[in-house]
Image 1 (cartoon, rainbow, N blue to C red):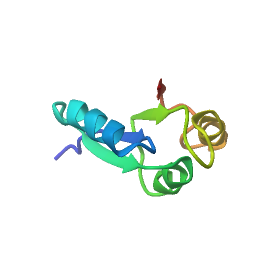
Image 2: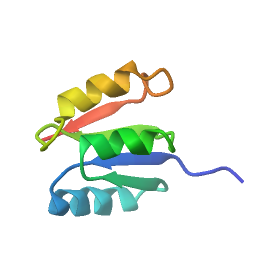
Image 3: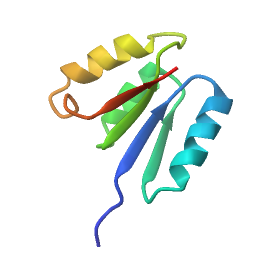
Length: 85
């Protein structure tokens, strides 16, 4: 049985996470959620998302720095990232 693709949603505002998750739930995909850039990088050690929805403005490391770190990782450097702001 083929596994559904995974989408990683990264945002530090709970309401934004809820709305994005609700939109993505309508698709046939698994959802992983991170409330910070640091948490997103931790999740990438255990998941292989086909898409990342990434907030730009976050506490801790922001979306731009999170993106730079993802692009440095050989297994995730080609995953599409959409900035959500």
